[in-house]
Amino acid sequence: MLGPGLLAGLSDDDPAGITTYSILGTEYGYRLLWIIPASTVLLIQFHLIAVRLGAVSGKGFVALVRSRWGRGWGYAAVLGLLFANFGTICAEYAGIAAAGAMVGVPAWLSAPIAGTLIALMVVVGSFHRIERVLLLVSSTLVLYIVDGVLAAPDWRAAASGAVTPRLPLEPAGWVALAAALGTTLAPWGLAFIQSYAVDKKITVATLRWARVDVVIGSVLTGVVGLAIAVACAATLYPVRAHVETAADAAMALRPLAGSFATTLFGAALLGASLLAAAIVPISTAYSIAEATGEPASLGLDSRHFHWFYAAFVGLTVAAVSVVALPRLPLIPLIYSSQVVNAVLLPLQLLALNLLDADVAVVGDARPARWVRMLSWMSLGLVLACLAGMVWAWR
Image 1 (cartoon, rainbow, N blue to C red):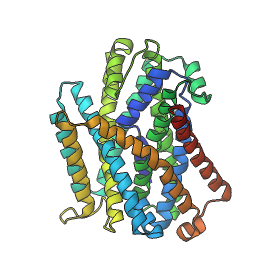
Image 2: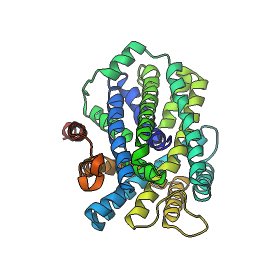
Image 3: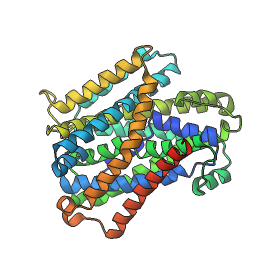
Image 4: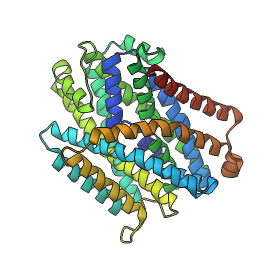
């Protein structure tokens, strides 16, 4: 049963997530660490909903929206995910390019090589072979935990910051909170885990073990995020450093925590980028195929044309081209995609809650009333966080 929870969770620790956690620790020290455990709890909650919906309906997120509310809503869902996800895919390949640049490999070489290898793996490989490779790549994220220990943080202050909610003192702090929440609970991750659970043929009978997988993957995601933020809070915050990307954080660690810490950070950045560069296009290809009623699976026969594979390869080629070619407006594209993610997340959580409470969809697997109430309260917390960011910048 291992797979959906681990891959959907750990791929959230992608270059955009690593950058967000790095900025959280660098700019605010231990003060705002609590948002990572809080986001992890929400991640567990909504990933469990998505897996349950996939198991009981046999449909991915977009396919379920399409069948329940019509083609129009299905197309609207996939268009929102497509626009938001493309900027995120570009961010993943930018992470690969940044990791390559740390050892002198230019972006025009590292990004195309990575894109070619990932595309060949997805198109030619079988479902279980692809899953094993992705799980192996995801194991590199443990290097961030080692980095957190090497940074020699104030463990008491870190523990206090992780469990004591403190509100930001400035507007930028609210943005950091919203970014941390959005990067942990990503719309593409929610769509991926539901479609992947269907592709893995998880059923109501095997749902119990799938829940264990979700909890393990989500907790590891939170631990990795905390390790990144703690490493930066212990080393970069005291010297008032400023970082804009994950690669900046890696290089800034060199004089403060040693070259070994920088090497580990860079290696983990490469692993995280490779994992997410496969997962996010797969998630998007699932959604595109589901919206058009075409087969959506990693186990399709690659000797015949399938829209699923065509969408995956097309997204990969486009993202690699954006990252590899000089002077293209990469930052505005990535930034705008994250704005779309912020708007899309509450809408997607709303749809998940409505579907999860719909007897016509889940039947006897409908959760208890108190579980549904918690889901609605969590949606309210997400909206409150986004409202706080808007209010702070008014």
